[in-house]
Length: 298
Image (cartoon, rainbow, N blue to C red; front, side):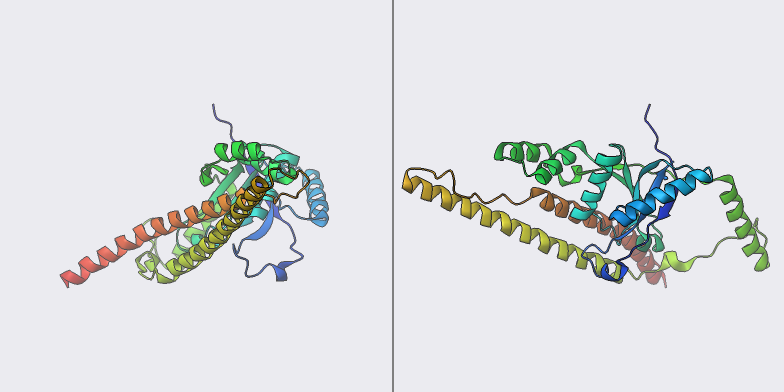
């Protein structure tokens, strides 16, 4: 049987540097923590003190206070960054290997697509990041880690999310529905919701923003590839010099190989953008074909 992780409460962590967090490449905002049956955002010492104090207050009022991870909002699916990986790594290392991060995308949700995703680092990603963090990655160990983690999509393990609502929330939503229907002078049992947003054919702004981000991340990936090319050229040059001197100077400094995790993160994010564009374009083409058929009949 599969284990189920329940997240019952969440609280936000005050952002002291909100004014400095605008116009990020990923435009993701660090929001808060999830408790276990709860979730909190990782940060500095002040954030840690706030989370500990908040957990104590929740325990006093008999609310679930077992921290099982953290959450943050994202903009158009942008999340695959080094800081995001570092936060999740610290949670899975310091808190529990089963700690998760919950991501919510308000922009895509407003377009009729509820985006609520849950991730956890895979064991291969944990091993590769730990080697790079400790600076102990030799050529052999780096090759081994890269062999284990060749697919960028295998950095994060995505967990299925199921939303459940308490009875009080369901009663509140039903009450709001009936109140809205009665206010319009309609019967709540025969009212058919009229929502013309589904007929909106304006897909250009949404797709343009996706393509803009996609181009930006591809440029970053090209920049990372240039680092590897420069490293390879320097290494080959040093090898030729050592052969000419018939001896290798063991004391000569050796340039450190660039981190491969950054390239994997970039490729993972590019893959996410491509999936979102494919999904949104498919729905948009359906609307366009329907509208085209209606115009032909006229």
